Image 1 (cartoon, rainbow, N blue to C red):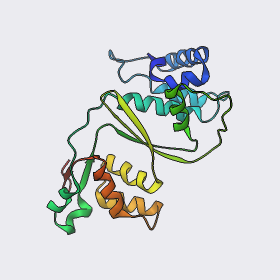
Image 2 (cartoon, rainbow, N blue to C red):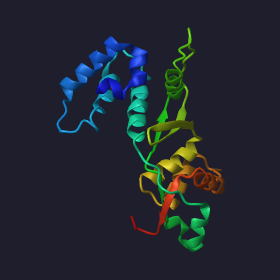
Image 3 (cartoon, rainbow, N blue to C red):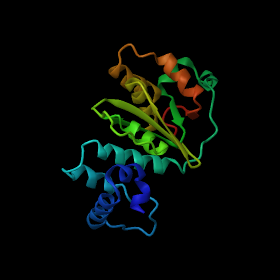
Length: 206
């Protein structure tokens, strides 16, 4: 079960090491529920605590786990940006934009998405120049499929805050903290154009 949840990690470390990591996780954090569907996140901590492994592998494990979780999501019907016009302009900062269920956002100090793509193509190069690089990733899954997309850090901040339940005003303020000249209008237009917004609610309405 654990090996199946972390295909890129096993591809990188080899089956023997992967089995050892799974065994260590089972000892430290055995399953405590009858369903294994959500079991396995603790392996990320096992990888992070292993001083013999490269530092980026914990982020690879986090990507594997998250993509596997998102791939079973089902897209909801999306809205166009005209949905905002139904609300008075002065109330826009208090609105909550609800996004597709199969979304997650990860920031990493390594280009770990490159490793996932190499694994999916089964095209390991003879040598790979793999150096630290800050990446901000959107992960989207639905009906067994998934996609990774690099984002501008301010865009990631906006979308991540929205997925966590922040109001539109709060999410915009967070993005402006990252990038003071952040293009709010363009970011919102793109958010709707990509079919990511599923509903809009006012005030404290969930």
